[in-house]
View: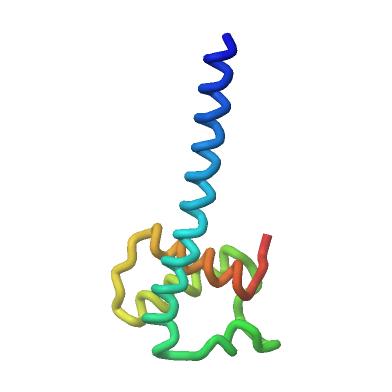
Length: 95
């Protein structure tokens, strides 16, 4: 029984580490996409100005999709999510 419990603890720990690494990679991928594409049209001041248009996490996702389409990009949903996560973590802080 102790061997089973130790294996379970080890597997749970490994899964937790993998999830943490994936989250960090997503932010990194989001930053890379943002810096390569979004900064072609505007600087980061658009996120911090008092009259910014985005008021929710759903609104942020819609805006990222609008910008992606305006630039003629063909991002996968995961890439859109990466950019949204990066912008939210870095600037907006929506729950």
